[in-house]
View 1 (cartoon, rainbow, N blue to C red):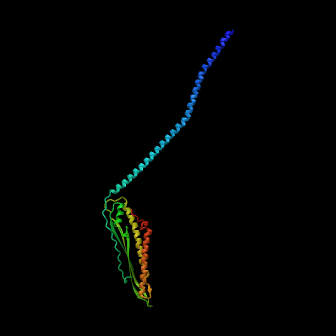
View 2 (cartoon, rainbow, N blue to C red):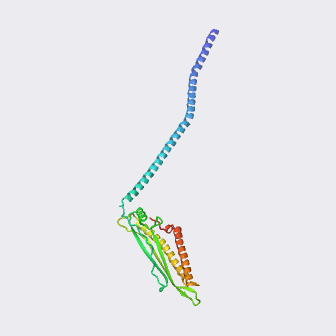
View 3 (tube, one colour):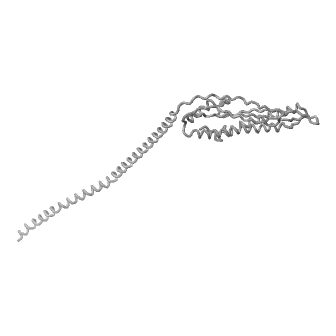
Length: 288
């Protein structure tokens, strides 16, 4: 009985050991799988943000590229549109023929009016004069006015007003022996020069209407000069008529000094008027 017991015990132990060894194989395999999964999971945890970051950068870069392309397209389109507009304007301008040359207007001094002590009072006259210009475009108008318009002190003007004052009077002695100025006659002659656009053929659309508006404003400005000259004539008459001095020589000298001063003020007033209005610009007299 003892021998049998001795033989079985090792065998049982061996079997137990073998059994444990066989049972350990699947356990180790499972552990290896789990460990592998954990490693893969860690790799995934680390790799996914990198992939997402790179994908995000790729999307951003694509968006930036798209935006840049769109901006480039916008700039290109704008440049093309600008080129097309300029080309269209150039083509439109070049489609008109060259206008004929204008002739330089001559601005003579205004002539004194014919006045007489037999017809005392104030005599006023206005003469409108025109010089011809030829144009198809707004640029043509500017060039022709610059070339043929009135000149003064080296500058060209579209319009100009000139004037001439004249006066005459009688001496008459008063009962006290003084000398009085009577039968005063004053004349003022104003000449205004304007451009006259002679339209021949087709011209730039809308230009005639703009030109007419310009001419209306220019006329308003030049009539401002005319009115200042008329007002000056009134001042001369009122200052001289009835003036009395001790002698007729003195009366004549006083009238002469008064008239000279009034005319000097008239010149200064007209210069100030041109400066204030920009030669009519503030009144709308701006070339189309």
